[in-house]
Image (tube, rainbow, N blue to C red; front, top):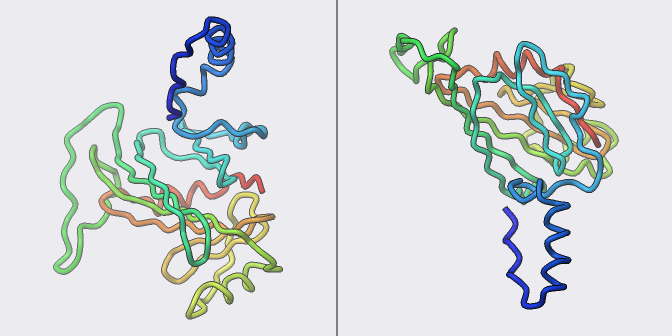
Length: 205
């Protein structure tokens, strides 16, 4: 949140600042700067009561289940250079009902339940990189991912190209960016929910 301006000493300066604050008051509580270009996601139509998320800086938006509550963290990436956004997601339904714990396999972690329970948690990382001079997605993958994985072509919103890697990550090529979505399902099944909403994604640039 922007740091409030110090109270001025002179009345005329105070009046001018008051007018500026009144004009931009809706921005004061925003955790991110309001973009100077038209916001993406304005035409994002989410069904089934879903909510929409948009990131003007990264240039993409998508729909997600309305019971999801998330905490977002950002971190710059060095190799390749870009921005990593981590979403810590918790399932918070409108009405809490008793829910049985999922069975735990003999070895390994509990599997995501078919019907999520209140408090179930998982996280996902969505990374955005510059496309650079890569002519296609395969060229970018060869230059930035070692060893070069096998690519399975998929459809992902309005991306120019999109693939899925053997480890489950999805990569989208847009006009100027490469976007990677890495889902880490805990007791909350992110894979089912996010894969069924790939068609809601809008890549702005």
